[in-house]
Amino acid sequence: MNVQFKKGVLELCVLVLTSQKDRYGYELVEEISKKFEISEGTIYPLVRRLTKEGLFSTYLMESTEGPPRKYYKITEKGLEMKKVLVDEWSLFTKGVSEMLEEE
Amino acid sequence: MDKNQFLQQLAKQIKPLGAREQREVLDDYEEYFEMGYENGRTDEDIISGLGNPLKIAKEIMAQSEITKAEEDPSLTNVFRAVAATLGLGLFNLIFVLAPFIVLLLWPFVMIVLSAALLISPILLLIQDGLTLILLKEIFLILGLVGLGLLLLVGSIRSSKIVYKLTLRYLTFNLRIIRRKYS
Image (cartoon, rainbow over all chains, first blue to last red; front, top):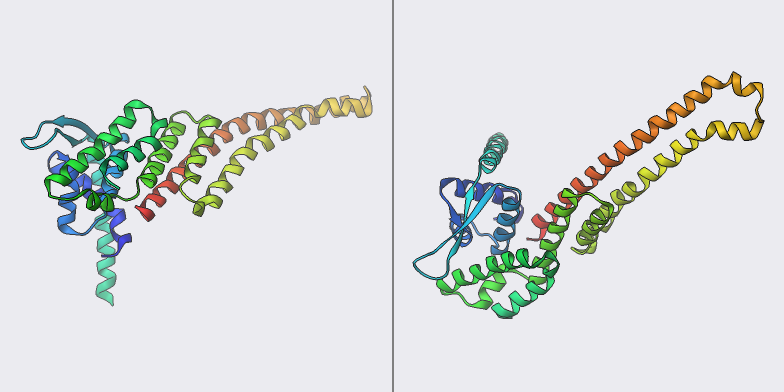
């Protein structure tokens, strides 16, 4: 898939996934990778930035296997941002598919 | 390169962040390695997925400098943010430099202009001496001084706006770079 396509929507994907339930970093990479290919390096800096901007809060939780994991929990502000991005995305995809139909 | 070398390189480059934040970033990446091992991956495989630690560090540093400058937009902080962004590659030198020059020149030009207007009556006095002309032109003089005061206030206000715009522009620039290279 085209790289430029994905970059812009990663933020949206991460917000949607964390709004379903709290997630840890690697899980986010895995979930998104199931749907399309991403470069792993992108997710951590992205989630870090979103946390700094107050869209996520974090907490540590022990796991049955391996070291404790850092979970990301979406905040009120994050949910608002998600709504804005989802609306933008629907508008965008609607426009593109209309253009494709006219072709 | 193995995990330790990766983390060491990263740690060294992000040292200016301070011990706490440095630890946070390193913990994130360490966790990432651990999760990779659980999935049966090798150091090499994980690192090729993550990318060059020097590049990761540069982005983290630039991001932190910009946040700092946003919280406290002093000239030093803005300057450091610009330097950090420039460190991301020559590519955006022009794009960063142009607004920064405007940022530096704008308050200067405005202050020189308003100072000229404020001292204009004194200049007139030196030129013509204390004559009737001065009385005749009193309204013009008052007008000029008033305009000078307005400009002075305006320059302070607009400098703040230029500051904000430059910072917003820098952040925007950084986002583009992240999308382009990450």
